[in-house]
Amino acid sequence: MARKYLVETFGCQMNFHDGERISGLLESEGYEPAASEAEADLLVLNTCSVRERAEEKLYSRLGEIRLAAASCDRQPQIAVTGCVAQQEGDALLTRNLPIDVVVGTQAIRQLPALLTEAKARQTPRVDINPYEDVSFPLGVAKASDPTRAWVTIIEGCNEFCSFCVVPYTRGHERMRPVADILAEVQRAADSGRLEVQLLGQIVNHYQAPDDPGCDFPELLRRVSQIDGLRRVRFASPHPRHASDRLIEVMQSTPKICRHFHLPVQSGSNRVLKEMRRRYSREEYLALVDRLRAAMPDISVSTDIIVGFPGETAEDFEATLDLVRRVGFSFIYSFKYSPRPNTLADKRMADDVQESVKTSRIMTLQQLQAEIQVSLFQAMIGRTVEVLVEGPSRRRDWEMTGKTPGWVTVNFPGPATLVGQLVTVRLTAAAPNSVRGELVEAASAH
Ligand code: SAH
Ligand code: SF4
Ligand code: F3S
Image (cartoon, rainbow, N blue to C red; front, side, top):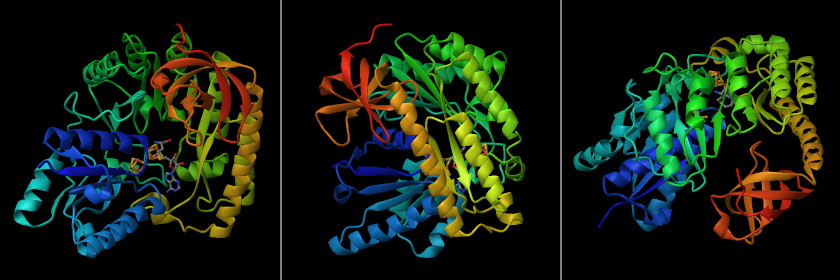
């Protein structure tokens, strides 16, 4: 009987896509997906290390798995992949945890062979080598999203922001050949997916290794020309590398979604400097102005860290002020969490009290909630194009999907619409989504 596997992914979109790659690799070796944890012969924990809490998830999950195994006398094989695997390597095996295989972020192709070896030799196997090769066999990743394809274009990061563990867990920046990227997107379009999301730690730093004339704007242009594809997205661009040419290409290419997720991290120049972000708040605001001058309807969203070492009340005020000025469509906000190897952790004390971090993040989220409600209210009465993802979380007779600006829209409609682009007239605003009614089932372009 085929062995059954389950992949649990924590972390960012790139990790999610690595989960799709891992699933595909396992299935090409004859594994089958398990319907539940109880049925799984193999559990893959695809981990994230970006904040301490994300890393702790691994240890709490391993604790749960051990308990479950003790109560039913059945021990699945356990593999740890992703950023904690890369960061900890062999050290994971010294903690008396139920782990059979540890595979780093650049070694996922070794996973099936290591699982077999670990089983045959009854001993744990580890591979966290920084393989340089970023190629991945075409058609192997298991497309788990019926609406959009996720395509990695860059792996790793050379930026070394002082708070961030990613350059240590993902390695230095490596670009995929443009030929591979276009072939993968073509395949996604042929399979009926209307949207593609290009992924990279600094996605707009792309430069094709196989074509000197193909930088990120040019890649966007080429991807947009692929037949059958209707929407192109990317995450995350770095403000420092957002060129005027990128803005021009977006403006002149309607298939590129009017959305820019542009992590700012802080609105204080002093903190930005300590973070080594290499732009000022003025440069950031000027970039947002340029984006909006070219595309007035563009949705701008961001990531913000509160409580970075040394962040004063004034620094935090500057962040609130920037948030008010920009009017982000949404923000992801985080309390600073010291991470191993990073400059901030080595050189600075985590000196903003937890209670201050909590009160700052609450203030920030409250401000953003107000901004979001007024943005959503201004959308009422408009018609928008929605890519339908599936039944809404609360009501199964309603469908949910995203606008080009990544606003969640819920509307009554049949499940046959999943994967399609529809036109919806917006009727009411909720805290994190907008409701509407179907105008046209297949939006014409
Ligand atoms: N490459 C992206 C960010 C990837 S990490 C960029 O440069 O914009 C995703 C987000 O996690 C970051 O934008 C940051 O807001 C947050 N983050 C990263 N390290 C963190 C830390 N040590 N503590 C708290 N939040 C952190
Ligand atoms: Fe981390 Fe900075 Fe690289 Fe983003 S750009 S992944 S925040 S080091
Ligand atoms: Fe987490 Fe690694 Fe992504 S640390 S955010 S899974 S790159």
